[in-house]
Structures are given as C-alpha cells and as structure tokens.
Image (cartoon, rainbow, N blue to C red):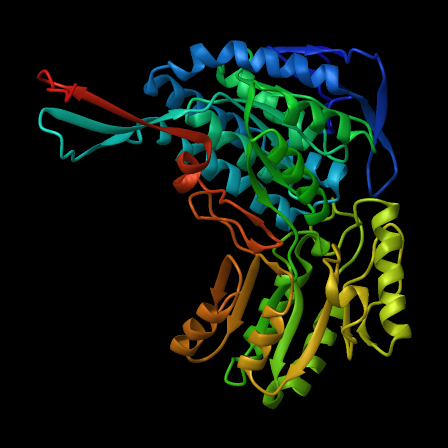
Length: 496
C-alpha cells in the first residue's frame, strides 16, 4: 500500500494507506475497504481501514514533529506553502477528474474548490509573517508586558466528503501555517481527494515528516478514530465540519477532556427574494444557490421565501429553469446535477420528499429519483411538520414559500434551530442590509445566493450550526495560545 503509483487516468490512488510520519504505512489491523465511485459504482481502489491505534500513531508522529516545525523560519514555511500551491495547480486536470470520480463533483464546483485551495495556500503563506503578539501598557513601573501568540501543538482535523478538497484544506492549512502539526481524518467517502492527495502535495512541497498526517477508516468506523483523537492529551485542538448531531457528540466528548473545538455544522439556509428584486437575476441566483454540487454544500439554499408580488411568476420561471438542469455523469462538463454521494443519501431524499407530498406538499419540478442521481426538485406548500422543513436535507431539494413581506421571511427563518448562511435579493441595498442584520445566522450575502467562501473570511454559524470561525484571518484566534509575558527592567519593592 505504501508508495503506490497513481493511475494515469487521474483516478485516485489504487491503494491508499495511512500517511504517518512522512511515510505511507499499512493499518495496524491490515484491513482495507473498497473506495467506490458514486456515479459508476466502480471500485477505485482499496483504502486503509484505520482504528484508534492508528490514530494514536499519527498523533505521536505529529507531536514529535511539532518542535521542529514550530521553530521553522517564516521564509521556509512560506516557501513550502507557495510550492504546494504551484504543485496543485500543475495537476489541475487530474484533480478535477479525481473529484468527479470519487465524490461525483462536476466541473463547476470542482473548479471552485480548486480555486479556493489555491488562494488558501497562497494567502496562508503570509501567516508565517503575521505579528506574533503585541505590547501591552502596564501600571506597574518598570514592567514591560506582552501578549504573545504561539502555536498550540497537534491539531486534529475531521473533514467531510462534500467539498473534500476545499474543506480538508481549510481544516489543515491555517493550523500548519501558524506552526502547528496536523492529523487529518478524511471522510470514508473521499479518502483520496480529502486526504491522500493533500499528503502527496505537501510532502512534495517539502513539508517535514510528521507535520501532516492522514488516517483513514472504513464506513461506520469513524468513531474509533475520533475517540482516540479526542482522548489524546497530545491533541490540543479539534476542528470538525459535518452534521449537527455528530458535532454535538464531539463537543460533549471534547468538554469532558477540556479540549477546544471549532465546529461548522448543518444549515437550513434561507434565500429571501424581496418584491422589488430583479426577477431573472433572482431565479438564476436561486438555481445556483440551491443546486450547485447537487445541493450537497452546507451553504446551499434549503428554503426560498418570495414576497407575494413576485411569488407566482418566480415559481413558474424557477420551476422551469430547475427542470431543465442537465443531470448525469459528473465527468461530463455539461452536467449540473450529478449523483448523490451514496445509496443511503438517495433513499433519504426520496423518503423525505414522499413524506412531504403525503402531508400536502406539491412538486413543481423533479421529485422522481433517477439512481444514482436525484433530480433537482422544488417543493411548495410544505407543512412545518415535514422532516424536510425542519432538518438539513443534504441534496438537490429546495422548499419554496410565498410570504407577505421579507420581514415575515426573516421571522420564519429565525425560527429554525440552525443559523449558518442566508441571502437576501432586493432592489434596495439599504433594506437588504437591514434584513441581513435581523437574520440570526453567521453569514449573510445581500444580492447574492448563500454559497460563497473566501479563505480569509470568518466562516461559521450560530445556534445549532456550530461555533468558532474558520478563515485565515481568524485562524490565530482558534489555533494559537495567548501567553501573557512580563519583563522588568528594574527591581521591584515588595510589601513583605
């Protein structure tokens, strides 16, 4: 398994081992699992089925490497990250092909992921030169006080499959740039594009052995790896992107170990169309925002609210536009809606749509599965008790609702337990800002749809959508310790 060559077609490694201490290694158990394409069902290769012992080996390697990496000169850290960006860019075609075959990601979203991580690497290269602290005034004569940021040590990163390249990068590159070492646990659905590929790139770029490690696991076996990462006293921070139920369990465990976590969790993201919006623009924005990467993006619009003056015409145009979206092979550049990630996801979508229809919802577009795809689907008249109106349904289904006012839409949106992203489309920018400030979410885009991200922005949600913020501009707050240091330039007089 160690040192296997990549297939010439751009497919992921035919065999993927753990990457620990700078080497490709076998899992301790010797077990593997098949990595299957969600589109064809083809077995792309065998993947190490890791466990808690493998995770502990990776943590030990990261801990051992921390001292050297944290003391690396800024110019060297910068050189490695810039080199990694160049290497990744040189493999553009291969990376896009791998994203399509491993995660069903079409060229539209694949290209966006790649551009995001290229910016991420190049912007992160400057973190090495970020000021490490500040001088603080002191009321004690002769005392010079400083607040100094320093890397925490080993960071455990748990990344999902849906934007495997981008979210694995976001979970690891900021901490690395600040001098931490990392153990990455990718999803079992994306062991190559969300794990092994990053190991290849960073190793070739010259990252020291042990600074970055990857441990994979079989379906249903994430718990053993995650438990080991949470329990290890050598792991100082955890970051996780995924579902709210899983994030809640991680937070509970982390609390028992007094371990800080950054959580980016589920969203029930509203898109509000005001009555003065440009109708064609609103339809185009909503179509992209709901169905990019077949709705399998945490920021995707899940609920569209339209003020009544536009509601009927919006529904007609939107349904027609959605029904015409090309569905099929993600490797075809024309495809917009590719396969959902697995059979379980397809069955869940079908069950929730059927339940909503049974409760009185109407289907305006889609609604009939075409395995392994689920077509872009628009529902209206969905009752509040339907599952699809309450939780995050991760796929190409959106709920459309007419409202008397945008303010009513804000109130309905704020009734959700989630608060990740939202968008408002209006002809009055000032009104858009007022509505944005009233939304209980971490991210709002006015006159855009909700699927946006930039490496340096404060990305994260409120309520059940998580806590903490990803983003290079805020990485030091999450992945550094702040130390207060004083130095006296004269003896001090003590009262006893």
